[in-house]
Length: 557
Image (cartoon, rainbow, N blue to C red; front, side, top):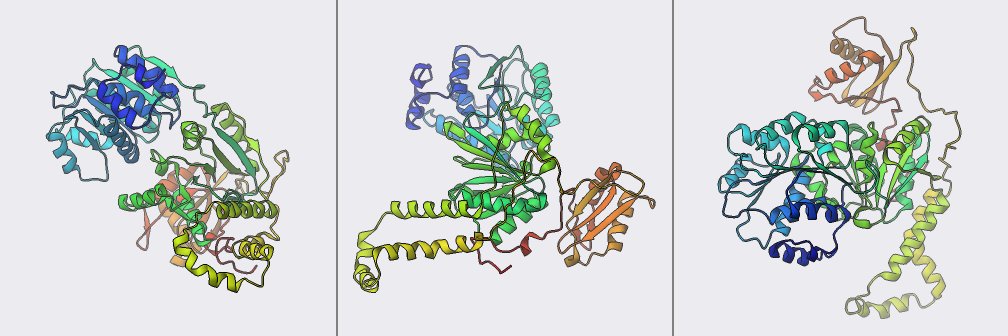
């Protein structure tokens, strides 16, 4: 079936033609005819990047009553970035519908301007749950005439804690409306929303339920925890044209990994919750324009990113929730293009890998971390390909060529090629000439990775890491006082304390760990806000003090 055969309005059809859309994606082919024939509730299960916005946007925009200046279509999305992306797509789809008004409302932007736009009249509202709730509470919008409600990336909204907001928003909309719910996974929470707020929904699934896209290959490398960062650098060097996201578990780790990559000469930046909205926008603009090849992010920070054509997703740490892996890997391999999801794991994480395999219905392929020779060969041929494909501007270069030929007259053609290659290539040869083997055998059961410690009394101990070290004048006595004050008890069992340049770690009774972390994150030390987290693998290595990588100025060992 073609878009021209779906019965879309002439205005929508013209916009679709302008965009070069000819044949719908599987989710569009299944959803659009249903919405064009008769309005009914739908739960659509499909991976991110499969064309869901067009699936609900093309038919619903064509059914808007332009003469009625009130919200008729409400679309909820979990993040500002996704909200803006949906709005841009809808504006492109509806550009030939005269008088169509679409307003995006999201946090991080002046609410007064958004309220003013709504007051002037609006047909379509695209919103994040928190901001639309704020506007509802101010009584600046009425949703009693909404005839279509879309919950996009519904599973993400629930994971981000928007359940109460979603319930409140749905309560403001009419009972008789069409509800369209789109999600990458069918969790129990999603099933509950479908049961409570939808009328006999038609379930449309593209691919196997909760499965990963077929266009994404899943590989893993196995190394000691202490070698994780070195393995990451080798992966990035082995794929010279990489354009991807490196996922870390915590904000602190995100900052450290990004700082280390930048110091080692890689085009990388961090994306985490501590950035202001303007800083976040600046980083994302650089990434979209490919001035960055690697974005280092947490799951929360990366949700709803409007980025296309990613070649790789790298899991520096596996996510705590196996279903989150689907969201990570779904950011590559979009629109039928091939992508790769890479996981760097240690021996302790083999079990978690199996859990993820059961969720995504795919098998991971073990790969050996590339050695120095393999990386150098990849870099060499990528450089040769780049050179052979470069476009020569004869008008600019020809005036200099006589002088160039004169300087190179005594050197053979073969020697010239070798020397030009060496200028770019020598640093990789030098850096990797004695590179160690980082690989662990995945069949091996023994491991020297650090395990969760035990106290002298046999209690299970957790390791809390926080962002205060010698550089901030922290002593072991300070750490003990922080723990005692945070716990409210003098008999709290404290194990090994280690203080490094930029961070410290302390072992505490596991049953108190979460409460202590929560309390520490509400405190400060000498005016510095504390950032604490549980981390068994922290080794105290200061990334900023490591030897430079092949892309930067390398120190001697």
